[in-house]
Image 1: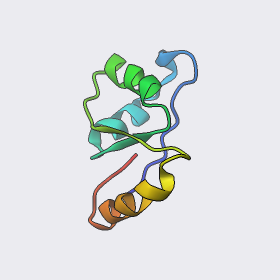
Image 2: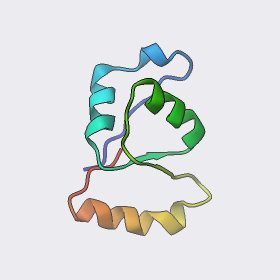
Image 3: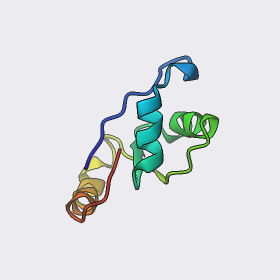
Image 4: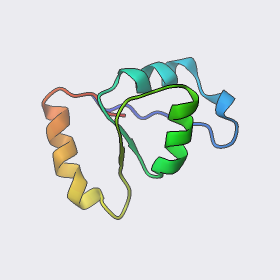
Length: 76
């Protein structure tokens, strides 16, 4: 399953409990800016693997991500 999880723009405390739970439970987190996302994950002690996904790599990365979804992995 693919989860679209909104993340706070400024205050890390604006992160919802549901979003936190999803990011802890998925197999992989995809983020446009991994540096910013890493700060959020570290703040909430979330150790889920993180991978960069953005306009410059989407054409190369998408087929492998679709394959992971077809295999039943959960991505956010």
